[in-house]
Image (tube, rainbow, N blue to C red; front, side, top):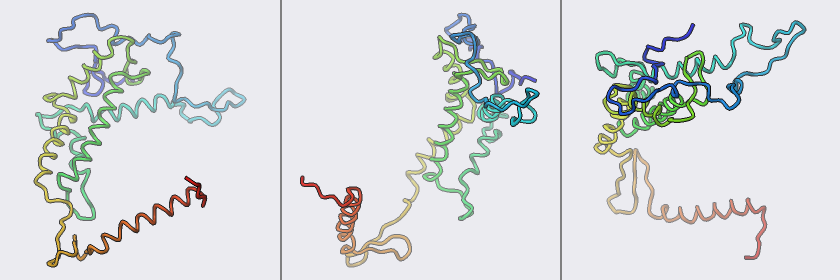
Amino acid sequence: EDMDMDGSVYEDLGEVDDNSEEEEDDSDISSASDDDNGDDGGDIFSPSYDKNEEGNSANGPEQGIPLTTLAELVFGLSLAPCTERLTDGQPSSTVLVYFSGILAFSKATNSFPNARAYTPYLSGLIYIQRLIFLERALPLRPYNSLRIERRPRFKQLRRLKQVHRRYMVMGSQSSFEEFVSLRAYGCVAARNDMPSCLLYWSDDGQSVGWGQGVEISMGQFRALTEYLIKEVNSLCNSLMFGLEPDI
C-alpha cells in the first residue's frame, strides 16, 4: 500500500506557492522518465542471490522483500521526523525537537550541558537534516514505495527551492527552523558562560594551576619545548628507518 502523499512526510512538491512568480507547467518536476535508455538503471541496493533448482532464491530473504524497498522505507523513516507538523505552533510537540532536548544529557553528571557544549549537537542535527532535505528534493533515483519521483533534468533549482521554502527558512514552523534558532541563541549565551577551565597563578608568579591541585612551574613549561624536540627527532628517525642523508 502506497504511503499517503497528503501527510507531512511526502508532500507533493509539484504544488507551488500562490504568490510564486513561476506559473508554468510543473510536469517536468514530477516526471520520472528522464533516464537515458528508458529504465532506472537497476536497483543499486539489490544483491544477487543464488538460485536453486526450482529457480527460487536459495539464500535470499524469506519474504522476498527487495533491499531497495527496505532502503526506501529507511529513508522515509528518516524523513518523517524532519517534516513533522508542529502542533499549535509548539516546536516541542515534534519528536525530533523533543529528542534534541535530551540528546546531550550527561549520565555521569546527571545534568544538561551548558550552551557552549550543546551547540555542536545542534549543528550535527542541522547538517543531517540538510542532507535529508537535499535527497528529498533531488533524488538520483525514484523512491517508488514512497511515491517520490527522481530529480528532473531541468529546473532542479526550482524544485530545491520548494523544499527550502517549506522546511528550511525562518517562519516555516519546522524542526529545522527551531534548531537554527536554538543554535543562534546558544552561540550568544555561550559568550556569558564561564570558560571550560580557569587558570590561576601562584603568589610568587612562578607556577600556574588549573582545576584541583594541577600545577606546572615555569621551569617545567620551558622544558616542554625540549621534550617536544626530542620526540620529533625520534619520530623522524623512525620514519627514515635510521637513515641520515646528507643535506
